[in-house]
Amino acid sequence: MNCLGYGSHIRQARRDAYMEWDRLRNARLHAILLITTGSKAEGLTRPYESDMDKLFVVRGVICLESGVNSDILLRETIVFTLNTDMCYHGHCMLHLERHGIMIPQVVHDALCDDGNGHVLLSSALYLDIYNTMELMQGEVLHENAGPSRPSSIGSLHTDSVYSFRCHCPCILLRWAKRSRHWPQPDIVQKVVTLGAFVTPVGFKCSEYQHVEWRICFNTGENELMNSLNNTQVYIYVLLKMVVKDVLKPVKKEITSYTVKNIVFWLAENNPQAQFNESTLFYWLREGLDQLRVAILKIHFQYYMLPERNLMAACGLDERQKSTWVNTITDMMNEGSNTLLRLPRIRKAIISHPEPMMWYSKKRVELELLQLKLWNRSMQCEDANGVVKFSEPMLQAINNRMI
Image (cartoon, rainbow, N blue to C red; front, side, top):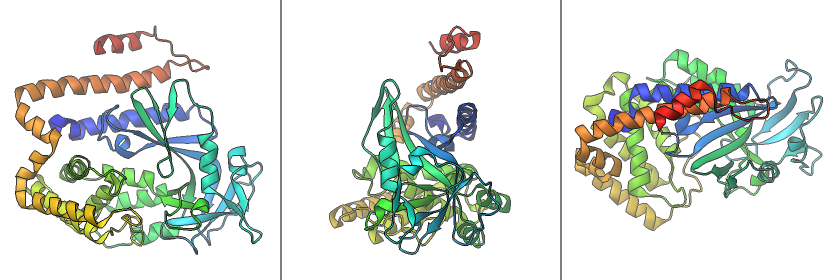
């Protein structure tokens, strides 16, 4: 697992690089806060290995849980109130409570009347506005996936999600008060402090989905991922490989996000000392069993908000369900040989140790240089965004990569 790029040191180096990238970019942004999320923030994928997930948070807008006092907020803050009465768990409608001094155009154009004299913010309109925005040079826009706006520039694929900060203390306190083995109390408190976000996507089966928003905990979940031990991370990586390379869902009937929640529940419900290298296959089997049950029942509880079913409206038919359940059952009976079903692990076993170690060393160095190149390029940009490629460190990085 270390040779494949999942060791603790390379994970930390990746996380540090993307945090620095966010810091440099946010220093130049005023109306928007940029946060890297997903596998890049977790330190689990190389630069071009998977999509780069970016959360764009509009500054000066806050969404408050019902009953939270807005008087303590700055006068210029735009305030929306969460209304969950008619929504599926983990979703809400946003009622405009306070205009602030000036509403940004992108927010103003997504406001609509609910027919009862209240002003709502439409998630569908909000997403449509961003889909019509001007693209960067060479950028290609792809079909929307949930709340994200996928695009690519060459081989670099980005999933952009435009969101608002959400203050929902009651939801987070319910999560925090649960009896648990993991995470530690200081991590629990930090997750509560980091708060939540609302993203523009409604529940698929709702007649009001065009005005519904999903409550998410991206930064808190990043913190939770970083507090997992090595064995728990390896279980997560292996289960993701099972979904991607063995089950191969076509329409996201099951996602890596469900797998992440499986690992979170395993970590919370079991003593941490039991997660070590000698028990890796035991916990992998436990994870496969939970995945099998989730598929069989088309139900799995969201870790942050257990009332929400992550498998709801996933579109899984009986034939596919039966096939996947049988496949996972076979894998559980194969023991450690189940790893041979995973192409990346199988190739690593065949090429181990000398070719694998040589390749791993070169690839890690190139990856770290690439991350350094991105951040250094941003530091060498002028006011117009033009990079000064003659800068000595940029040249040294490029020469070493070549």
